[in-house]
Length: 330
Image 1 (tube, rainbow, N blue to C red):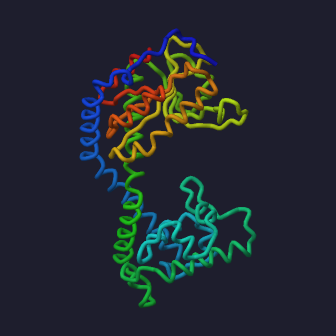
Image 2: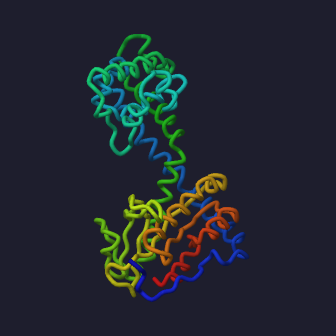
Image 3: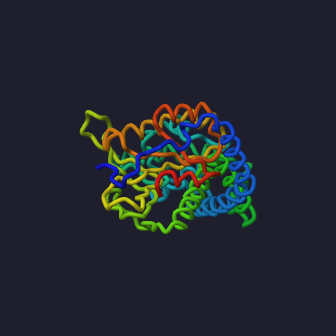
C-alpha cells in the first residue's frame, strides 16, 4: 500500500531548526494558558466522580467492616480505592509485597478497562489470595479517616461524605498526570476535528479500517496493523490518534497518520521520545518509506526532543500554528 494522491512529503517544521526555540516558547505559553484555565476544573470534576465511586465502595464493603474475599471477587474495581484508604496509602506493587499475592491478580483487578479477578486461578487459590489482600487492607485502614470502625458503629452521613472526599483526593493525587493528559488529548482531537470539518472533511464516528477510508475523511484512535521488524512476519496493532485520507486520495490509499502529544514538563517527553521513533520504524517496515507520520505538539518540547524526532525522519505540526497542516496536502 502506498500514497497515491500525488503529494511528495515536504518538510513542515523538522527542517527549520532556526524556528524551534521560538515555537517551543509559543507552545509552552499555549499549554500553560490551558492548564491555568482548565486543569483545576478538570481535576475538580474528576474528584466529584471519584468521591461517588468511593461512597459506592464503602457501601458494598459495609463501610469497610465487611471486607471479605467474596466482596473483592464480586467488586474487583474497588481495590484502588481500598489502597488509598490505608495509613499510609499503599502503592500497587507495595500491596503485592505486603499481602504476598500474585502481581497478575492485582493488575487484573486494577485494569481500568476490565477490572476482574484472574480467570485461570483455582477457586481455592483465588479465595486465599483475596483473603490476604483483605487482611492487609483491614490491618492498615486509616482509622483517623474512618472513625466509626474503632467504635464499631455505623457511620453518620457526614462522616461518609468526608471520608469519601479524603480518599478521592488521594486517588486524584495519584492520577493527576493521567487526568490532565487525558483532558489534553480530548482537547487536541477536538481542535483537529474543528480544523478538518471547516475544510469539508467527514469523520468516521463509528470506526473504520485504515485501508478502507474514503477520500476527504478522517478517523480518531484507529488501529493499524504493522510488522514488528522488517524481517519478521509477526504483526501487532498499533493505535494511531488521527488518520486522514486527503481530498486527492483514493479509497484504500495509505492515510496520513498523526500522533497527538502534549506535555507539561520537558523531562517526561525526553524519556518517551523513543516511542514515536519505534512506531515510525514499524510503519516503514510495513508500508515503505513514503509513510506520512507526523506529531501534533502542544507544550514542553525542547530542541533535544525535536532534534531526536527530526533525526528519525519524524515531522511535526505545532498546535499554536495548526495552519501548517495545510502543508500535508489536506
